[in-house]
Image (cartoon, helix red, strand yellow):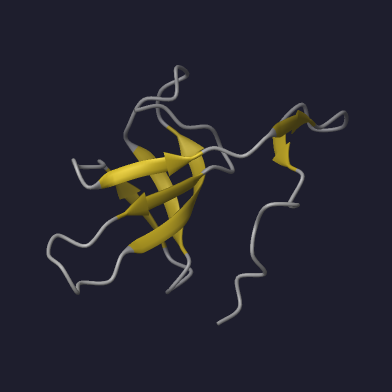
Length: 84
């Protein structure tokens, strides 16, 4: 599993009927994009260190190089508003 800052980490519920959880990868601990990740959870807004298990997958977004910061940024076109 590999991710980039701005990607969405989705963790499926362990049993049928258990809700899934998702959040935005806000920091990497390895340059190659392998876990663990710092994730800001969409349901709480808290950032936690995550070691994804077998029920997790990454939704990659297109990243563009930001000219001022040199960091990657998402274009936001495929993301929800986060409200709900």
